[in-house]
Image (cartoon, rainbow, N blue to C red):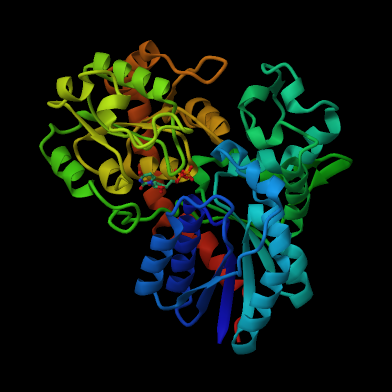
Length: 476
Ligand code: UDP
């Protein structure tokens, strides 16, 4: 039997798009089996297992393989504290022997026609080379961010200091297909050039062009400039343009049903029932991904801004950051009397929210987001304009893209230490829900929603590219 093997980064945002890609491939090639190899992440938020169980229970052609748990160096474990410092490089490298074992065992019963590694799991390439399996990379974020990553070797060569030691307002204004990016908005993992994760990502950027192809969770009309820039070739540190292997923009890959009953649980039907009772296009939805957490101070400040905005809201509040008042009720975390005063027009949810259903609900008309790429694509597909409040990973770059390039979001501005004032929250939410600027981004995202639909319909750019990809695999 022919098989495809996939190797995602085991965090929910990456796992979900990997499974969606697997489903798409199976739609085109139903006789295949898809094997997804999962290693134990160093930081387990408890979201993966229920998701994997659900997929295994409903799609028999998708088979998950767990790699054995490895012992991590104590220094590595103690350094993992927040999503911002969450790194994987050591875990991936240590897992290569287990990956080798897993591939050997899958190949006993199947012919592996292709291996699809998450961009961040490029360490697998040295293993798949031994099996001679064509290896593709999957970039779960957008094309412009991929372009930035592929340009990293040039940035590395042209700079001598770590980003953290540069003036935070210095602009990188020649990243192909990207508007200028100030140092402060570059992904934090790239800020320290002597760190292991920086070295790992630099290597990932150098290795990626050597893969058989790069699959990107985007669609060409959303990022035409970045796609063209990469197709034309990326600047290489030592000379002529670096030509890339085929790029496959097959998105938007989003989960059509992510009701939290499977992940996280609790609270979901109530918030949807509450939305049913709100007027059409009246609610702003605030949700910050699977890892987004705020300090108690920031939660209080946000509540004040929300209350003053006078808008209806559905707000997902997860446990506050760090050890500050863990497991205290919302009443103690939020300003005194806030829940009571806003109960007619606000709903605060403490658990996993059914985000896709919420974004597609007729009452929802604005989305305050951390700019995680899945959330961005989900907002595009629902046609809901965004207020961009990035927190970690490549999200600050996404804010620049959403605001300046795609014009489908308004920016939330933070102070130097990342704090967002209640006045800013109030002003921007009003702007998003009720102003010329808000209307303009709303119009633009509706146009993008149509483009997304076209891209995945028969003959659309993403469908055509997907057919090319699956046809390139040599099936038995
Ligand atoms: N999500 C959700 N409910 C929540 C939080 C997140 O359904 O309460 C989903 C969201 O719809 C998206 C994914 O989790 O599909 C988060 O992925 P994204 O890339 O936006 O952010 P990440 O969590 O990876 O930072």
